View (cartoon, rainbow, N blue to C red):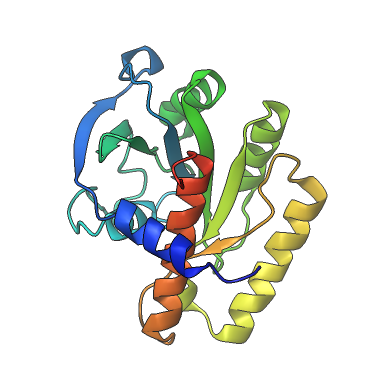
Length: 216
């Protein structure tokens, strides 16, 4: 995909420098805040790096609590982004937590009119798991727009990452009816150079703005 323009880059960085604050956590969809702002939500298997990504996006190391314990996030957490957008951190799925989070996630995705796009985080080290495929199938059946973000790219060599990315892209091309075609990437500084990581993060920011119609 073509690189972002200077204007797109500046717009994305400026927006995500805005003040961000916690709104509330909910255990049932009817407890969700009544807001007219556009919402974007983040979902993925337990420990895929979801909380870390949200904290990095808003440059706030402790906004979303991270835990090494699988299934730590059992609630939907809502965050106010500059009074213009709501970010939603969804429970991690996988392991044995499905009974506790399943209905909450599916109810929210199917009924939340403010939701503009779901960002599905996938760990390229593990690749797509059955739980990911089941969620993708549900999203397509419900006609819910989603986009995949590959996390933890620093855990793989460049070749390993490209191979994993290709497999995931091929699956989405065949099965991902409502999937936005562009795969996004995130990862910490390790084997990668910082400039590339910054560009990838800015691309994620721009995708969020674009999904929420906040890019003008």
